Image 1 (cartoon, rainbow, N blue to C red):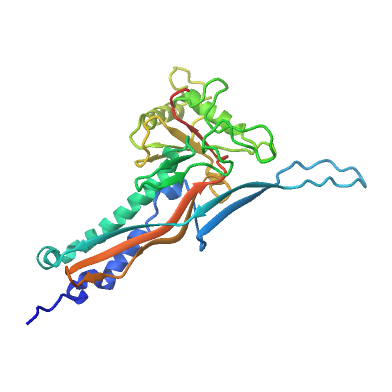
Image 2: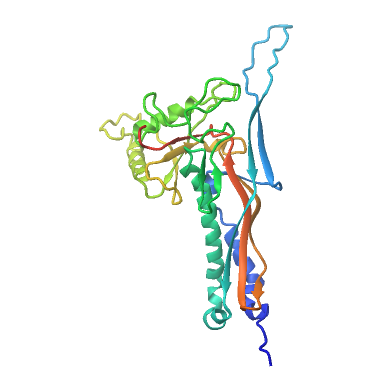
Amino acid sequence: MSPTPATLGAFGDLVDESIQDIFNQRADVPREMEKYFNVENTSSYYDKDSSIVGGGRAKFASENASVQYDAPIQGFDQTYTQKKYAYGDKITQHVWKFGFEARRLTDFVGGMMDAVDNNIETCAADMLNNAWSTSYTDDDSQTVSTAGGDTVAYFSASHTREDGGTAWNNIVYDGTTYNMDFEYDALKAARKTATAIVNGKGLPLGINLDCIVAKKGSSVQDRYEELMGAISRNYIPGGDENDGAAKVGLPKALFLKYLDNDAYWYAFDSSKKNSQFGLQWRWSEKPNLLPAELDYDTQEYRRQVYYFADRGANNMRSWVGSEGDNT
C-alpha cells in the first residue's frame, strides 16, 4: 500500500490563523526608514511625481492698477516603478515531525519578517549611502537611481533650477570647504548651506534643519554626543568659553545601523518630510504572507512573504549632506 502523503493539516500550527496574527503584529511595527522617508501608498505600477513651481513674490498694486500675474512653471518629474521583493522559508516533514515545537512559531514568523525588514531598511539607507552618485548596483545586481528630478545626485553643488537660474547647492559648505567633517563649525556651515537654498524661482525657501542622520556607532555619533553635551552647558565645543551663545546644535538625531560610511552625515528639515521634498517611499503592497503550500513530492512545508514598493526622490532641497572628508 502506498504511504499516505502529508497534508497541510499535519502542519496545523503553521497553517492556522495564529501565524497570520503574529505576522500582522510584526508587519505593523514602525520601521526606522519611516522617520526620514515620506511614505505613501499607490495603486499604480508607474507612480509619477510631477511638480508645478509657483512661489513668485507678490508685488505692490497701486489704486486701480492692474495686478501683475505670474506664470507657474513646470517642475521636475520623477517616476517610481513598483518592484517585487520576496522571501520564503521551508520546513521538511522530518523537521516538523521531530524538531519543530509550537513555541517556535513566533521565531518562524519572526525570521521571515526579519528578512523583509532587513531588505526594506537596507534599500532605504542605500539611497543615502550612494547619494553622491546618480545610481548604484544593489545586492540583487539591479541598477537603482539616486538622481533627483534634475538628473543630478541627491547631494550636489550644481542642482539645476527649474527656471534656468543659478544652480543651488546642498553639500555642507562654509564658503571655502565642501563636505566638512562633523564638528561645531560644520553645524554652522550646514545651517548656512540650508539658508542659501532657494525655490524653483530663486527665492529663499526657508529650510530649517532640525535632525541629524548618521551611522549608528560612528565617529559622527560620538562627536555629536560630545558637541551636544558641551552646547547643553552653553560651552563653545572645543573651547572654554561659556557665554551662552552655543545654540547652533540640532536637537534631534537618527543613528541608523544600515548606513555604511563612518564619516558621512546628513541633516534635514522634518517639517518638509512630505510628497514634495526629500526621500520618498511608495508602497503598492505592504509585506504580505502568502497561504501555506505543501510539496507532495518532497513533503516540504513552504511559506512566502513579499511586498511591492519603490523609492527615490524628486526634490532634495530639504536635505544637506557631507562625506566628511573636507573636499
